[in-house]
Length: 282
Image (cartoon, rainbow, N blue to C red; front, side, top):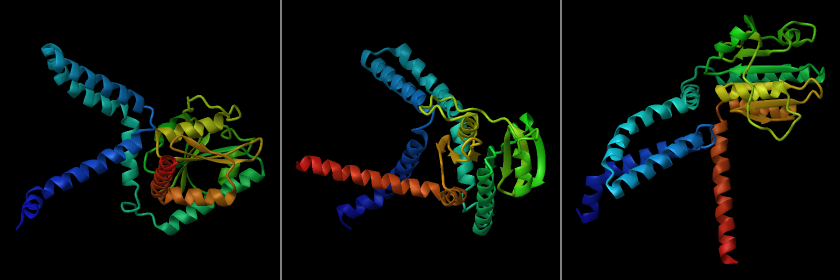
């Protein structure tokens, strides 16, 4: 056995260890880079590294001793800062098709029913806000509205959002797991970010807010225009056609969105490499 063979035999476990760490760090970076706590995390890391290097360079023993114990507090602080994101990430892992007992046929039927409901509301210009509960429980919002336990039917949703009913101003929570309406007239948290489009109303902000705090999918129907919007991960997709809505909803309920995002990122990286080659050639 040659030198290369002995090296591989002695260190192959190190290669696996590096690969596992790379996958964890890369996916954590992708998931947390656009979150609200990302800037806080970056600032804390920069300060910690800067103080560590400074204390080592100038032999500041007291600061070095403090940083040693502050690192434990920093680790706990990071868990607190990223608590919503960590909860949602774990919920997404648990809701993956590999762990789910909901069949593809059931997901498709549920998506078709939701599109049918939203399409009718849109054509009748009935404003609506529907949050589809997935893995993260939305029970905390039931306290702000009226708790129900009813079978999901188009007639029930139309009745709730009719302008003459008491519950039409709030949001409806629909459980995907058993296809039941668990609450109506619920108040969801509003998205607090500054939005360039001033036409985005409270329903749309509430849809962005509830999807920021959970893994829910929110559907919004505008009362003024009848336009349909979808919110996921705090991001709003506006003026979707019915077929596009069916496609997006089916994809999200089947947890195929992450795969499509990976493909888009790979395409963007390839385009950047091509552009860099063109610039270097010119």
